Length: 149
Image 1 (cartoon, rainbow, N blue to C red):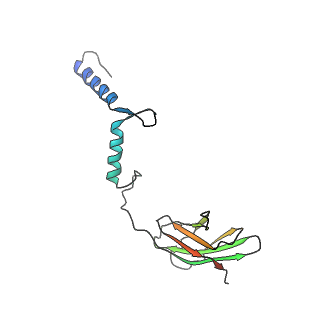
Image 2 (cartoon, helix red, strand yellow):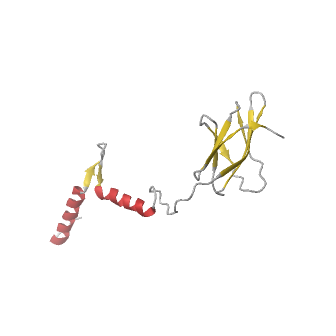
Image 3 (cartoon, rainbow, N blue to C red):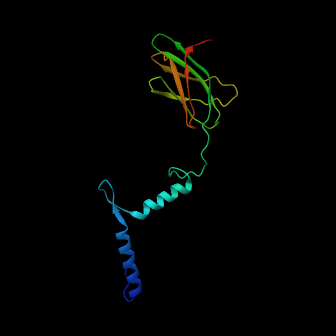
């Protein structure tokens, strides 16, 4: 860092070193010192990206709508098959199925229009309702009905 015969370079390097040490602060939890400027730069990057720091420059979108065509069950005496058919207004959304207690049952295929049979889930009880949540923010809760061939 310091070179012999260059007082100016050594003085500048010392000034940088003193600034770097004085610009550090201890973490609130007593952890290691963190350069104070990094937090400000991170906040500026988040503000510029318009988000949570994930680096996305995509503008915030509206919440999608979910339509459920089927939420049927077939009780086989011990094993219950659920047939769930749903479509999101966001063609790229992932749809996730939950029972009334909030337990995750699996991913429902996004029908995206067209001919679509649905997703089958095997569980051990008949839920009164099912909730489908979308990766694009939408959600819907529907009552289950007995399977109708």
